[in-house]
Each structure stands twice: as C-alpha cells, then as structure tokens.
Length: 216
Figure 1 (cartoon, helix red, strand yellow):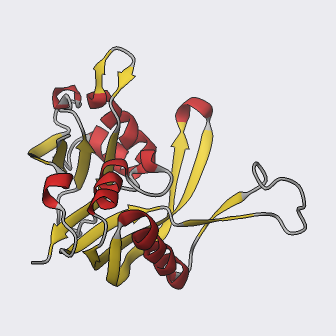
Figure 2 (cartoon, rainbow, N blue to C red; figure 1 turned 90 degrees about the vertical axis):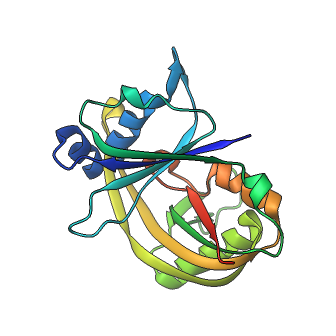
C-alpha cells in the first residue's frame, strides 16, 4: 500500500499554527481535522515537528496511508505544502545502507521491587533520560523492531515535552529524544512495517515517525 508523505511549512503569523507549535496535543487535534475523511472515522497518521533554526520557518511532517483533506486546516495555517508518495516494500532491500531519523519516547518497563504477584498490570513505564540509556534504547529498537544493523547513532536533542489534554483536563509530561543514525538493512519487511506504524509510545504527541534515506 502506498504511503503519502507531506511536508507542511507553517505560517509564522498564523495564531493557530503558533498555538499548535507550543502544545503537541493541540497540533494533533488540528491535524486530526484533515484525517477525518468520513463522519466519526479518523484515518491513522503519524507526524513530527522538525527541528528549526531561529530564522527557519516551522515545518511539520505528516504520514498516512490515505490522502488527507488539507483544505480542512484553518485559513492561513500553512505557507507551503509538499507531497510525495512511495511504497517502502518496493524500495527497501537487505544490505542497503540508510540514514534514519526518529523523535521518540525512549522508555523501559519495570516491576516494583518485592512484587511477587502477576507482573501484568503492575509494571511501570519510565522515561530514559541519560544519553547512554537512550542510545541503548535506539540500538534495541534497531535490532528488535527496525531490522537495521546499527553502525552509528547520536541523540540530536533530548528533554521533556509538556502538553495539556483539554477534554480530560489531564497534564501530559513525556520524555523525548530525537535520534539520527546510520545502519544496514537486515530485515526490509520489519523496517517497512515500522515505517508504517511508528515506534515507541505517545505517537499522538508527534513521536514515533521513522524516516529513512539511502546512503548509496
């Protein structure tokens, strides 16, 4: 199935766009408007806010398996839009060297000390804050999920994102790390599947979208 990949350049004088850039939950709510193609039916999508310099226009990447209704965005919300389509399964091949980028929620699941009952329902997910723990996490993801033999990786940025889930008046605080790395594809089907689905948790907050580019 074809994947549709869109690069949105946001209008820096749009109040709605600047509001959404300040809160990823608001951004997800706005993008959800374009993903409602039928009443009460939301098409799954992944998104990521790109890191921008002080003079760069803000950019958001959006990926879905169906065309989205960009006319549903607020007037003046974007200043430019670029679209491309591709099929990961037709492009990715074993032995190919690639560069990947992903902003994700690196976590580890633990069981409380001294707990002797069933582990299910008592495990706690904790965000990984140290660079060494985060790099170990992305290496595990490459080996176990992405089908990539990692050759290099770096944490481009790391920190907490905070959001406010309006409907439930729930505060959200999530550990985030952006990774850039290189590696050799060992399992093209696994990589294609994770490109489609994303990796990690908190995907509605703009996390988990894996983008790849060939190195040769």
